[in-house]
View 1 (cartoon, rainbow, N blue to C red):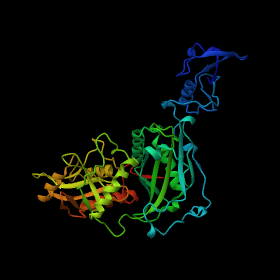
View 2 (view 1 turned 90 degrees about the horizontal axis):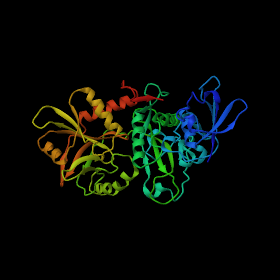
View 3 (view 1 turned 30 degrees about the horizontal axis):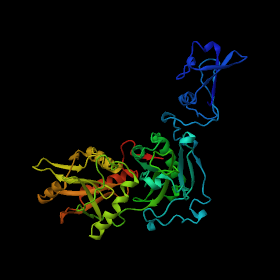
View 4 (view 1 turned 90 degrees about the vertical axis):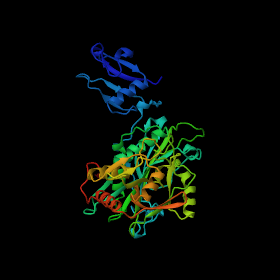
Length: 462
């Protein structure tokens, strides 16, 4: 119905093709006085031509450069539902910024930048946020915008509120210790990869965005609010990219509308007075995740059901749950972190650092987890193994004196030493904090703050 016109010299009709649309498939509709014939084609084919030449399908004129006298594609203003291959991508080139009247948050009764010694995780937010709407009816991702931090306007029927269509990421920006104007992100491409996977797992459209485009939008947000990043090792700007369904209808269905937004908050050291080893319990009837579920994705639905078990553990004097799965009691995660065990091998043969594998799909592929695996592999001092490890094996290793240390790993704390694991009513005692835990913590912090030379792509200057 909605027509798009191509003007093509008659002399080229038999010798040229407008890939991927062949002229033989087009219908001539008018003849021009300058020996041209105008053809009409479907919206879908017009869009594929526009996409091929990296132009918009809406009200944009582009030259194809097929001859000395280039033909012209003219797209109408008509809106049409795109197919998956036609979705407009996220583009940092059209990012706009609206600054708050004061970058300390004082323009809207929000708190000013606090003293860094008073920071509490997740309690104070910086002056600006990033929003990128997705609308199927408008062709896909809309223009990114940095704006003053504000409340969201959301339909009470939005499917994120009813069916848990929400996923998020956690990452940080750092100031170099040697140059406060040197801002860095830590392996942001891994966060983007995981966000895309989470979106795909929830059947959200637009999940195949270009990671570098979103990274650049986030980097600009950090640059705008750079004054909110406290100085000093252990201090950083926590970044929370989130995607929610804004689809304003009830009914369990793939959403047509999304909002990708990013908020940030200044945070201090997780251990301001030194390491605080945690006591865990594996004695719980609850299960965090299972094969075929969403444990390998960072979706909100993974976290809400853990609140009650964590509260019950706290009432018994334990900091967090050590999650296990199945009849063999395979270890999966600790709280909301990945977990590592450092052991002497049974029967001798050296030491190994063990972390549960991702192959079942019930364990989150943590950025810190992957970095620890890659970093310790470069040392060549012990085996680094991704394999199943069970509670009976850990219990046996403790009884035989082979359990050297254990720790959790995640963005917030980097590493968290483990001192006790309750198992079948008895506490397994683990030396804490061990030398390996301290070394990994020191090296990763050094990389994040630019103190240690890093592998390419680990500490990204912005």
